[in-house]
Image (cartoon, rainbow, N blue to C red; front, top):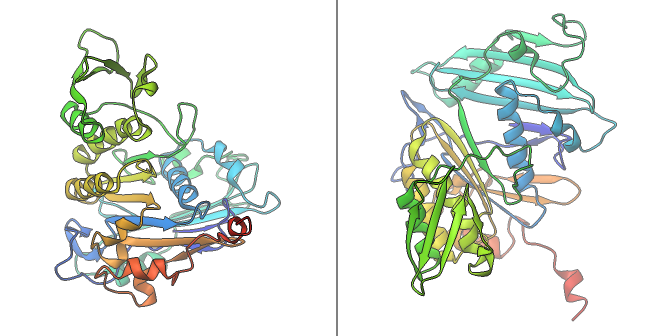
Amino acid sequence: MKIDNFYMFKDTEFDFTYPKKIANSTIEGEFLTDFPKINYKKVCILMGANASGKTSLGKTMCFINNYLAGRDVKYFSSSIGDKKKSASAEIIYITPQSKEIHKLLIKFDINRLIFEQHTVCKLKKTSNLKATLLAVENSTPRFTYDENNKHGIENPGFKSVAHSLGRILCEQSSIWCYLFSDSNSNDPHFIKTYTPNISILEGILKSFDNSILSVSKISESEGNSYIVKFANKDEVFIKDGVFIKDSEMRLSRGTIESIEVADFLHHIKSKDDCTFFLDEKMAYSHSEIEISILNLIIEKLKPNSQFFYTTHNYDILAMNLPSHSYTFMRKNEFVEVLHPEKLGYTKNDRSLLGYVKNDVFGTLPDTSKIENFL
């Protein structure tokens, strides 16, 4: 994915693939089903200082998913960095069911879509990643929208012209699940559905608070309502993913946020061919709980699915994941992306933690302004 002039991204490129299968990898199935020569990063841990662009990346990805599905993404016009210039994105992606690779180029100004080009070709079992990417690069575009090819649509707004004309950009069954640290019911990036697995919900809540005795669904209530019972006879209620009846006074911040994490886990276990993005929803969790939940997510991740996770926790670097599972982000004037495997750090033998603490990637925050007060 290449993005320019969205948020603080300027000509920024992300590579969520890797060229060669790793022997004895701790992550299974990092390749496309039926296409074992096409490897992709199944787990992407995004790390960097505050305001380094991690959440902004997730919101840009969510915008692209919604655009591919044909939704109006007008809300994203406010995310254009320099309002006097256009913003653009280039996305190369796979649709597993149709066994195709796509390249989409889109460009916007603050008022509307001004350019769209879509290229697609069939995947071949004999082709590796490099050959597959070359094939889509060299293919003739199937669809172009620009000033000379308007297809009868003068002002498309912020909606795909190709999709409006009935052309398929992604499969109708395509699913994605984004959970942002600042999500609320009015956030256009986030469409909330709360349907947790009761056993997962109870197990997660008890891990966060060992005074919880049980979690039960209130069968006669409308919507998704649950009662949480404590050893001291206290009771609190959850309705549609939110604690009610002044429950915040009884629970820690980490316990409150764990409800959404439990719902997220339910989706991880139940959905194939899916993109998942979890944004700092375990910032208030104990490190051991965070690592345990991440291990569970990685174990339950289905084929052709991809998981993105943002965190500040150094302990995550000691999980012995492949080095390509980590992406480091830093921001000076604009966001810069560092893939450790491209910088020669091809093995994560728990040494990445040392590199980060010694600021090899330049991702530690500048604390000099705080230290000036000492």
